[in-house]
Amino acid sequence: MESLLPLSNHSSNTCGNKKISAIAFAFFLHSTELHFNMMNQHLIISFSFLVLLLNSSHRISAQSPAQAPSNNVHQTPAQAPTKPAIQAPVQPPTQATTPGQAPSEVPLVQAPPRKAKPEPTNVTKILDKAGGFSVFIRILRSTQVINQIENQLNVSNSLTILAPINGAFSSLKPGTLNSLTTEQKVQLVQYHILPSFVSLSNFQTLSNPVRTQASNTDEYPLNITTQGNWVNISTGLVNTSISGTVYADSQLAIYKLDRVLLPLGIFAPRPKAPAPAPAVPKPNKGSLDSSSSSSSESSTTDSTPAAALLNASGAHSLTSRTGTMVGSLLAVVLAVFSVWIV
Image 1 (tube, rainbow, N blue to C red):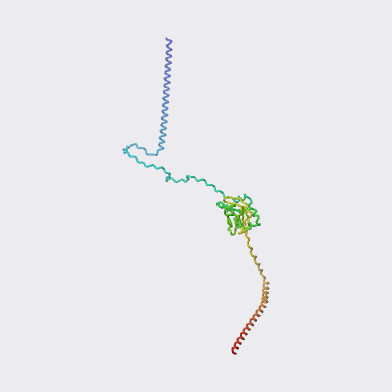
Image 2: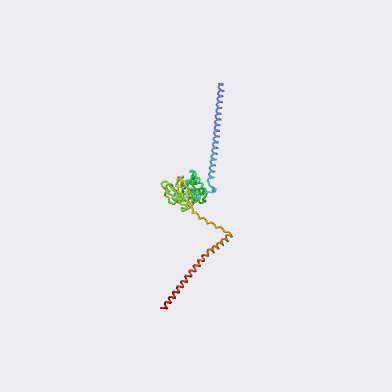
C-alpha cells in the first residue's frame, strides 16, 4: 500500500503537467489567432483607407471647381408639382457641318493618278537605227529643223517625213549643198516634210500640188501620183518614188527616198544675164587733137558734094519757077489780045 502511493502521486503529477502544457498551448494558439486577426483587421483598414483616398482624389480631379458649401442649410419651400413639359419631336441628325468648321479640302473620292505623258518620238534616233540616213540627220541638226519637228510632235501634231538616203545626196553635183544659203537649206529640208500623217494607202487622196512645210506651193510645188502600190513624186526637176517605209505610227510616218527632192524655188534654172558692153578706152590728148582735125577734114570733104548738090537743086527749082511765071504771063497776054480783036 505504501509502495503504491508514490506511484499514484507520480502519475497525478504527470497528468497535471500535461494539463498545464495543453492549457499553455491553447493559450498560445488563442493569442496567435488574436494577433493574426488584428493584423488582418489592420490590413483591411489600411486597404480601405487607401481605396477611399484614391476615389476621393479621382472625384476631385474630375469635378470642376465649385464654391464650398455653406454650413447654413436653408430649407426651400416646397413647390407645387408642375406638369411635365411636352417635348418637341426629335429630328434626325443632318449631315450639315457646323458654322465653325471649315469644309475639308480632302475629296471624298480620290481621283486616280494621271498617267505620265509619253515622250515625243525621237526622229534622229529612228533614222540612225534604220541606217543610211547620216547626211539627212546632219542637215536636220545643222538647220535646227529637228527642233521644230520635236516641238510639233510634242504638241500632238502629225507629220510625214520623206527622208532621202545617203546615196541620194551623193548623186547630186559636187558642191550643191555648200552653194546654198542657210535659208535655202532650211527650205530644202522642210520641202521633204508634209504637215500631216499620210499612210501609204492615203497618198491617193491628196490633191496636187501637195502642201509641204516649205514656203508656198507656187515656188515649191510637189505633185504626187499613185499607181497601184507605187507612190510617185515629182518636183518639176526630179521624179522619184517611195522605196520603203522606215517608221509609221498614228502620229508620224517616215518614208525612204532614193533621190533628193529639188524644188523649183531653189534649183530652177535662171536666165543668163546679158553680157555687159565693152568699155570705151579713154583717148589721149594728142590722139584727141588728131581725131578732131581728121573729123573736121572729113566733114569738109563730105560737105563739098552736098553743097554742090544743094546748089544744083536750087538752080533747077528757080528755073522751073521762072518758066512757070513766063508761061502764065503769055497766057494772060494772049487772052487780052483775043478780047481786043473781038
